[in-house]
Image 1 (cartoon, rainbow, N blue to C red):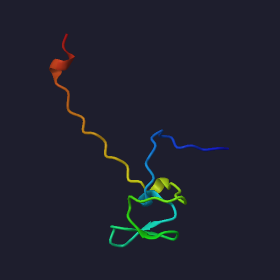
Image 2: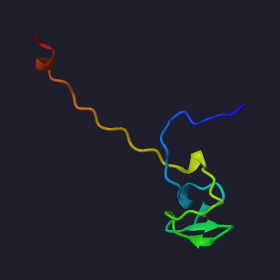
Image 3: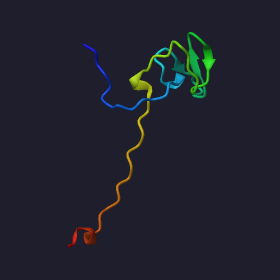
Image 4: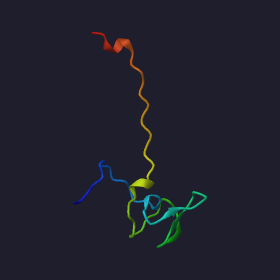
Length: 72
């Protein structure tokens, strides 16, 4: 059975989202077993997307409605 992500967005490959690499303690680089120390924006051929590493975008703020908007 082939499972797919529920959201249809295509995220650009980044070492920050890779299952093989992990973020360094300072948070400014990624420790990769294939490439060594890389930038979080880099990627390589052995890139594999890890859903749990991506931080989702914040929801937009919804403005309150005026009572005038509902009058006829």
